[in-house]
Length: 238
Image (tube, rainbow, N blue to C red; front, top):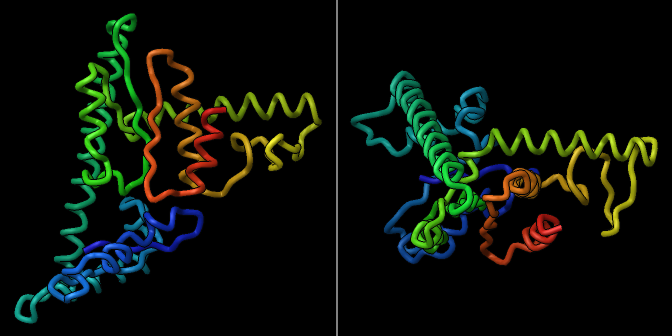
């Protein structure tokens, strides 16, 4: 069971990972394993629960997995969804608390300790794609910090950087769009060349946060030879 998503400004691999699995796994092609992949508009489970079309699509897919003699009723689906949302909230709280503890560990001896913020795509949760990088970082004596654990700090740093840029551009150019050296343009809302890709904005925002702490560095995980990541990482380096 792996949903696919409407692409919009999202990464196509993240949206269609289920299709990639279905196309490349022999067990799926040989019909020994079925891939159930409802197409949803919301990636976040917290956004999904407020979208009727997504809920109907998800309920239909779940109902199709149940045997005829034990169908999934709407009340069963709602109860299971509620438990799933609570489990997700609990998981995120644990990740954020672990991140706070890791940052506190670094700050407790900032002269000798260091942290690495790991930024990647949703599919990097797959250990086959992560390649044990988090374990290598810890073995080297550093703290491995997932982006989720610092997202509030990232948001704060991004907002501050945007405010500084808007003020600087207003003073220099009187507002409006200005050209960048890369041939793109910015209107003060983002960093560097304008992009509608959410992952690019997240990665650059994470870099802005890491720049505020000399005891942190950023490791950007890339897979599948994504060309947008190549451009974004260069923007992050700048």
